[in-house]
Length: 501
Ligand code: NAD
Image 1 (cartoon, rainbow, N blue to C red):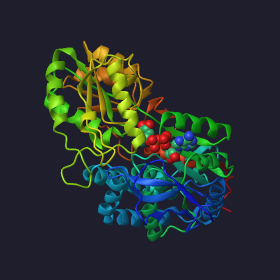
Image 2 (cartoon, protein in one colour; image 1 turned 45 degrees about the vertical axis):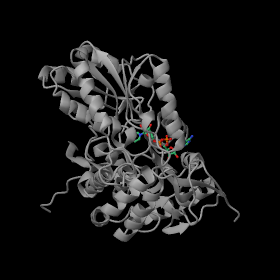
Image 3 (tube, rainbow, N blue to C red; image 1 turned 30 degrees about the horizontal axis):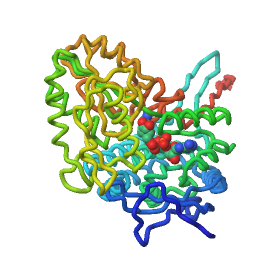
Image 4 (cartoon, protein in one colour; image 1 turned 30 degrees about the vertical axis):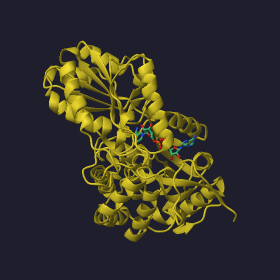
């Protein structure tokens, strides 16, 4: 078939790059598309692969394969399914270094963060391997004379996941290990910007013993998403990504009568109170705001600091930020990697310009550290930001931090609560009453107390509020068990014979 490439990354093409294939019914098959997008290492601008922007026909083939796979897989006893997950856990652990290297190469985050991502992903597999306990229903031996009721859990059938570029391993692992352990068949559409991890994840799952059709991968962008939303056999869609896309997917999936969870954008605030250990708070803010180049849905985007300590805190913060080592995440000692694409770099620069134009005070200008080699931009800190400013409102998703000066805790909470987003929020203080006030009054679903990135572990829900989440059941934790199962409640009468006869 004739095919051509179109580059959105503007990357330098190497002579021989891998052209990714979809994974359908246990086979790596070429997409029906003629349109491929370049996958670029953001630290070097080098093209590392080409990803197909697959078609709705590719989606239909994957869903058909998943329907077939589901028939047998859903009948495999739960402990046997769990054993596949145990083997998968073992394989992922053994390949940790290679997986982390792949994450850094396609996403840009540093090696320590990449190893951390692999670890967090493995924890999801660990949790999913508990399927026999997680899938248990409940029962009541007598609901009326001689009548009992039992609640059984069953998988849904074919379910799908649509994932973002910023956690190419962890976010898919929020979804398919649990869905599969519970007996569903899965179609994954990874981000077209970071599609390589999914391939290795599938290869290792096959090695762990999962039968064909249970996990399928269709690479691409909106056509694949629309194909999944519109396909009648897809029972549920799990989405993680930006707010506009999440809203679209939530609405369209509803129209198509599907179960859906959409985890979306964020604008996370860290509150620094006057009694906090300012050095410790600054270290945490740096890690949270500039780690993974600010491309985390739990990244700190705004610090609300009490005026009484603001100058002292900012001196420490800016000094620490200037020390941040920037470069290719594969190199030793590098903390800050590139943003994902040229387009993200340009967007970041335009936000910095907007912040200046709107009257914020630029304390540290990341544009000074831009670098031709990759999509690099240094840590950027604005002081005197107000909630009226665009840099306070929008999710920038880059290493740009806004500082709002507040009189007290009450004002800090009020400021944070004005955001349309409500993913995470943190406080640095040793005052128990302040911590309680914060917990009771802040609008956010994931809180950190003297911790900068309060991302819950696999067995707790990833529980964003407001515009950071659309749906009822969150990803992870027991919510994910409910999301990927349906229930059958059996009410049974057992007339009592006379056993004396
Ligand atoms: P994105 O919304 O651009 O892409 C996410 C997925 O949606 C990708 O698979 C992409 O191909 C697809 N997509 C993009 N545009 C589409 C369209 N027009 N129609 C249909 N599908 C489309 O997000 P991203 O840039 O990959 O990731 C960053 C975003 O993800 C940030 O907003 C971040 O906050 C969010 N995120 C949220 C969480 C969370 O738990 N709340 C976790 C990680 C990332």
